[in-house]
Image (cartoon, rainbow, N blue to C red):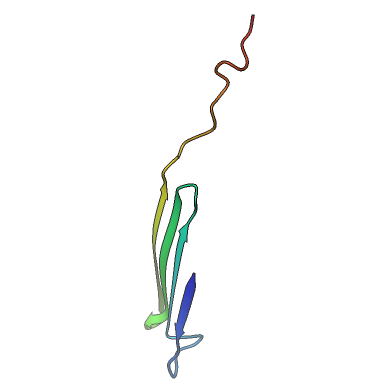
Length: 73
């Protein structure tokens, strides 16, 4: 995860902000994002954008279940 702020005269609190996250787990989960924030980019309007990518290779997996373990007689 990381972020960067770009400052400029007359731009409060900052001119642009960019952040990125890259996440991998050993269980097959991936979660990546890229975010942009531009307060007062278009005059008084703030522009924000976010791209997300999420991958869960073993989803949905809720365990082996009850087959063969909980049988009624």
